[in-house]
Image (tube, rainbow, N blue to C red; front, side, top):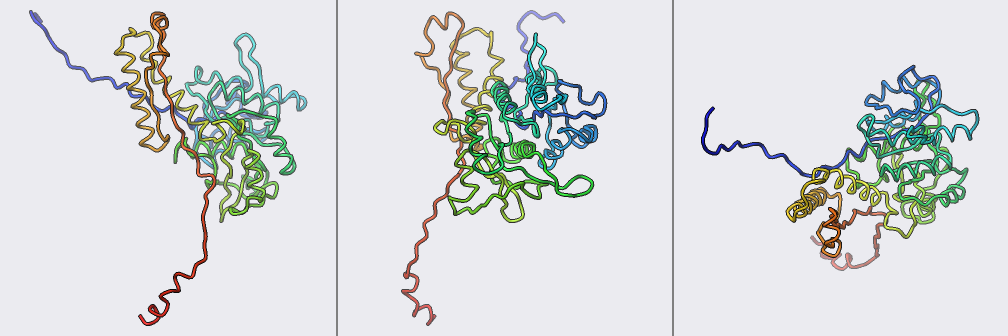
Length: 387
């Protein structure tokens, strides 16, 4: 069509709001020697969206089926499974679980690092339930740092003192240690049998993310499918000297029974006790904000570095922070362009730094109540009798 002039075509504006990353993705490293052929190739991340189907294909031996059952009792979560072959001895199994990175080929837990590229999922909740020896847990925390994921693992020990001493082997905000173990009814017989406590925690974490949010710690939420503990833990919410409180003070999360429900009890990671990341919620807030902001700003890379671009970036970040604050997932946050962080030389080199600060939501870990006896309510006793 001939036209001598200007034509305006209206198009829908593409939104650039920053979105929160998917947080309830579980990364599970497990053994399953008699799994259905091809269902879980060795050292490859496999996406599981039907836990029931995956349990049927996992076979009767190894750690995969028990872990999946424990997760399924808490949540209908998406799981990235990496199956490894058990070794000839404990050290060999540890080596298989830890894996390696040789010439770009990643095996064992290292394969979790490739899940985003291979199947489009980045695990945010990871563990190797039933295989979580000290070497394995140490290696998992390194993978957790790279994935910006929380690691859940059993604290090894026969009693409270040993569990507390075991905690001293670690210093990682990405790690939460759990003691004691738990039991659950066996699938067919219903007989109470040990269940992997780390898998219960991974499922609970995913369920809490979906129902309440990633800012809520794992503590004090009813668990499904649990019928007992492998060791006695005394608990009295008013007794600082009870076993549960001693474990929590040592930065070990325990399990208690309140009414008819078992619950994880504890908010703390294995971070340095003086750090800002002793609470699980603080660590997860840092992880999720970092990735949500970074991934949400990919659109800005390689655009002309104009003042308007810097202003747009700041506005988008603050818009995201306002959304999270309204939802109660952070106390507050603010992003800004600081001149001293952006010298001319850096801007000339195409480098822009936007600074932001935030305050995570702490859990109410200790509630003080003051109880006082008084006779003031007897002062008008005669009047009340007459009435």
